[in-house]
Image 1: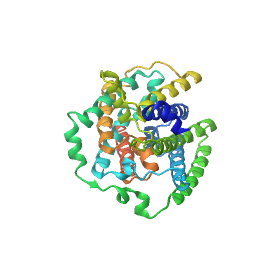
Image 2: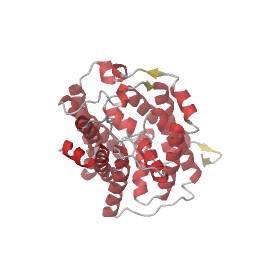
Image 3: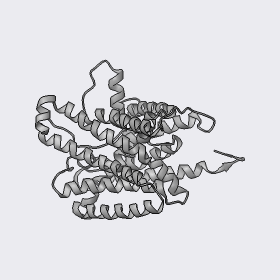
Image 4: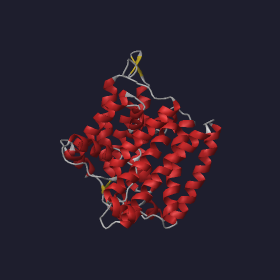
Length: 353
């Protein structure tokens, strides 16, 4: 069927349709579950283990289970994925992860959460997302590119087995899938203890399933196409910059998985917000100072390009295939976020910083 679709519509159009399908699922699930890495880090930094942490771990363990299960069953091969095959940067993962983690605390959401909130009418998220996207583009190909390349070049790691955490540990995909299944069960127990509604638990799991479907769809299309197609999954910083640049340039926007993903997530989140009555206009106010959001956007835009992905791109997509740099970036996103949140709680001269 995939070959028939490719023959009729072309590789790019099929990739875009796959991205849109995955995006709608992710948008609906992320909006209903309130999936957010920033929320999970805040909860943990305050010494709590509750619903927000449960949601993130439900999504993560579901993503790992889907991806590693598909690999062990022969439905997926990620050995040629950029996060594993290409040379990576551990210095970029560390520094970029710290910057991204700090930025998402200041902006009250990571890249994916800002996109989802934008679809509900949150004007703060829309402006922050636009600034983030412009900074990311500057870090990728613009004035900030030399700085990014210099920091990334401080500590490199070869692609292949050296960049695969499973290969380094000598663990099979089957064993990884079994561990993920156990983690998923334990997280469900935690979610039940935290009185998380069942529908939100299912939605959190669907966030992880969407990541798995992204890998499977792009791999299947790559296997059926005569063109060289990158096997990838959900990530937001790169696709958001490509989409924005394509919209403002006179040239035709190239069709890709990411180009379908971004509007798909927006549409899915908007539909869920409308259906649940949660769509409403939200603006900046005294308790939501614009300057804090803008600083957060700058840190996330640069940090995500340096780290090789955002909280979903590196955290869930890269983490689910056990790319070393993705796990390092994710770890330092947690560290950067928790440190920043704690610093913001420090009282200086009678007021919060």
